[in-house]
Length: 173
Image 1 (spheres, rainbow, N blue to C red):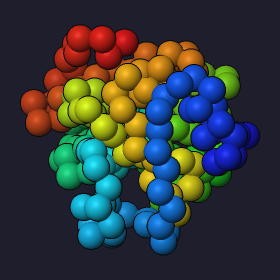
Image 2: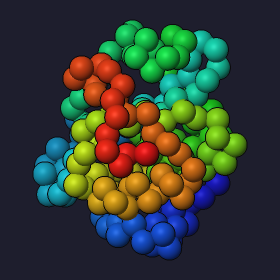
Image 3: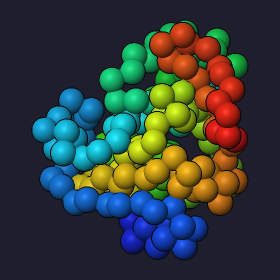
Image 4: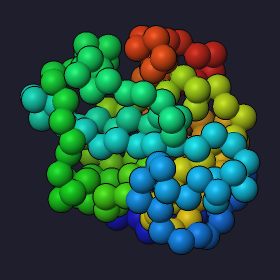
């Protein structure tokens, strides 16, 4: 499993132009609102899910997006969804609860996870994720985020959570 320092070195290597700021641990979206106001860009919430057929899903959405888990499976074409276990999260993403992040996809070398990206994040100039730990926030420009996805071999499914529909976003894939 890649560590925070290995992730940040990888982001530098691919020219992602990411900036990381250390801060006290943040476990939920509601925490650290003052801290988030001081960091430019869109902040995220990330859900690690497993469907009834065993498929793993990572959802990255704008921090205040409403995600209807009872309906989401019909939008993304999965079986019914529930939260994945902390053990499975560690095994596939290399993170613990409270640190779930799209950057964890660097550790999904077996490509077990399907990734869903909020349209708001796919269109934002700057996006913020934890760098595999919830004691820091990494701000990455859209071009850098797309470089990251390409470098780890991930094509996000883009979902407009306000409309609860899959959408195509120019250049998102």
